[in-house]
Amino acid sequence: MKSWSRLNRQIVQCQKCPRLIKHCQRIAREKRRAYRECEYWGRPVPNFGSPPARVLIVGLAPAAHGANRTGRMFTGDRSGDWLYRALYKTGFASQCESTDSDDGMRLIDCVITAICHCAPPANKPAVAEISSCRSWLDETIDQVKPQVILALGQLAWKSTVDVAIEREWWAARRPKFGHAVEVQLDNQTLLVGSYHPSQQNTFTGRLTEEMFDRVFRAIRTCLDADVTA
Ligand code: SF4
Image 1 (tube, rainbow, N blue to C red):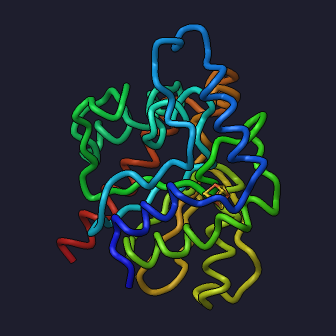
Image 2 (spheres, rainbow, N blue to C red; image 1 turned 90 degrees about the vertical axis):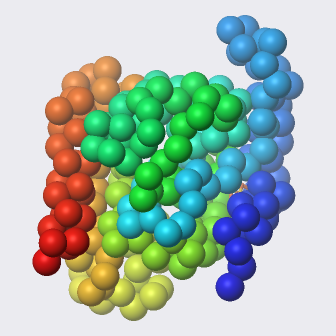
């Protein structure tokens, strides 16, 4: 099996979706005014964290001026502020703020990936682009071997279920996505759903901090129960 660093190198060098590669490069060239002094990453963003890890968090895609700028998943944008705060409060991250790839952040027992490793226009990857990227999700799951997969948003949930069906981990009717929904995929892997901490959800109150934290506390309780069982 490929090593973790080799997998991440291959993700960074991936060119399977020309539309997305061009978009990432264009954003990196044009930049947002507030970041005009920054050197943008402008490529596919690798997984963050490293195995062994009991929790795998699956996001949608890098934000144009967040991870596409910093080169680290959920780093440098508002969604990341929510995610790392929740991870820190439940002991999965070494600090609560994630500002850039040199900020000293360490994930603890946790890896962050995405169903699309390139920033898409309007935050919407095409179906074909998500499918092209699924092989990276598949290999990431193989290497991390998580006990819990947390899918942030409906599309992350769908891609994870697709992988589970391909692996014959799941043979029943497709499980419906919902916030804090839990589905046991096979004997070892629990799939948990959460609304994505996007501004669309957090600004409208569809997702509150308490709702988000509750999902992470439930995951922590589940892992702790497993250790003491
Ligand atoms: S979205 Fe995924 S498959 Fe497409 S170019 Fe980026 S890394 Fe490759």
